[in-house]
Image (cartoon, rainbow, N blue to C red; front, side, top):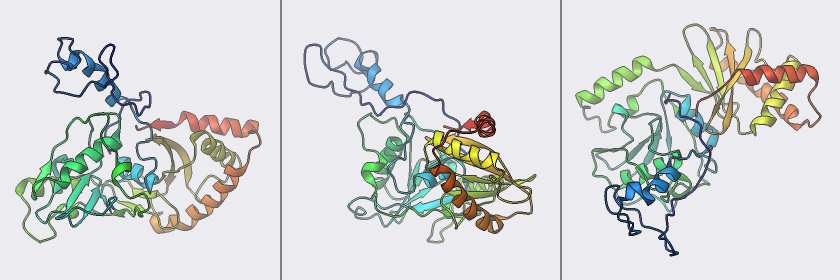
Length: 328
């Protein structure tokens, strides 16, 4: 799971420093170069300040508008090992047979251009700005033109570069494939991996928590831990409306997924809410399918209600709110 990032004001602002008395935007230049506005100061101490501030402001829902937004959030924050094929607008460039999103890559590389020209884009990396979508788009753009057989380093991006929403086909399905380990790092050609990649693979496999994506509902992920299992379900509904619905179900005693299961709280990640259930250690992913599908129907009914919460429901909502954790 990636590190927590501080909450800041959401914005899609673009740096637009301007020369005093003029109407043309000041070009972005190197931090130590003279500012193009003619002030005589270095760019980083002049108009670069506003540019840097705009780029670092947090975009609350970086994956909004992408197909499978809930799964993007899950792969970013919850799932150890998974991949998903990406479809670019206008098709793949010549010499790039495929583009694949991966939760994480060896040595935490932001991206990798393989020897065959295919691209792997890592999702669980620290990024330079507050717009994760723009950072990933920049990395992807550079990976598409990188030399085959080379990793792609992270870089600070400008505030007006493309975002994933600009590069990816919005009508293409997003279908994550969850893996038991990180063997997808290895070259498909069967060539031996480098010692560094092999060592990184062993470390990653030893730390991976067994995880399964449910088939009966969207973006729900079962995982196994030593003491108990969990179901973590990324939901697309507005947070306040979802918490009201969960409170109604909790107060009615219908928020569980069966015997010895319990809705224990939720995460808040990239603008979406992720309810979490504790499950008994003997309850596997297959045993979650029918209860999850039944819960989805109950939740739909609760979401459709618009009457004020009762006193019991308000108490249940307060408990859920107190147990909410922000991941991003």
